[in-house]
Amino acid sequence: MSNINHPIFYALVMLVAGLGIPVMATLNAGLGARLENPMLASTVLFVVAIVAAVASLLVFQGVPKAPFSNSVPIHFYLGGFFVVFYVLTITWIAPRFGVGNAVAFVLLGQIISMAIIDHYRLMGAMHHPISMQRFSGLVLMAVGVFLAVRRV
Image (cartoon, rainbow, N blue to C red; front, top):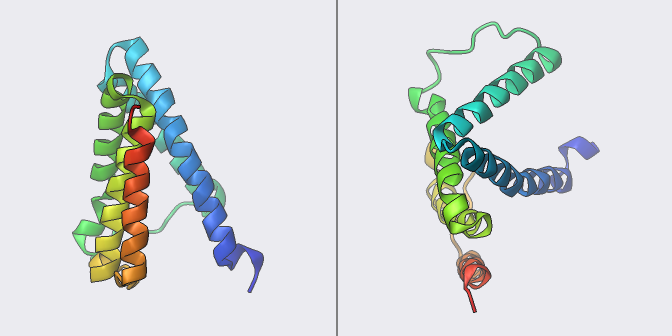
């Protein structure tokens, strides 16, 4: 197995991606507060993101033959709505609630969602049933989120 196709590599890349989420939230929340317009800040973020995504596509894969296919169910194209919802809400709420608190509850939502998606194999996800061990881990993570945001 090559290093790039190793589960540890995947875990490390996703750890770095996870580290970037609070950074992105902090930067965009700050931009929204300074512009006094969270929606404009979110729009700026998406303009920068689309330029970066298109540049990456062109550099690493070239011009795609067909971005849409009749064989792909329409719901697979709707993930962007969740990204927009996340960016708009984190940009608006983080300056009022705190970046740490906002991201902690996003994490809790991700934990709940991933367990349900994996357990029921929703949208073609790999099956990872909610065993007692996994359920205990999810509960501990949820408790950890609440302890992390609790004010003493």
